[in-house]
Amino acid sequence: MGTLTIRLPDEKHSRLKELAQAKGISVNKLIEELSTLALAEFDANTRFKAMAATGNPEEGLKILAKLDALIDTLRSKDTEKLLPE
Image (cartoon, rainbow, N blue to C red; front, top):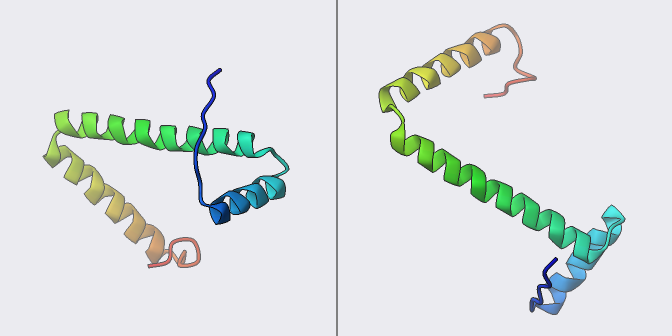
């Protein structure tokens, strides 16, 4: 396991401590969780870009059109509470 030393403004450090306390975890665990989220987002973005580079734009637009049609159908069935415009 590695060690990471970071410098943060005092206000940000205090807020992170408050957040960790509110979640009932240590600041170390909080930073670990936040870094996991950041890495998952980065990985998803990387995969999306790789897939987009090899994808078919016309097929993608067809899928989006189908999704739009489905959403319109659901909205027309009195589901405004579930799918607001």
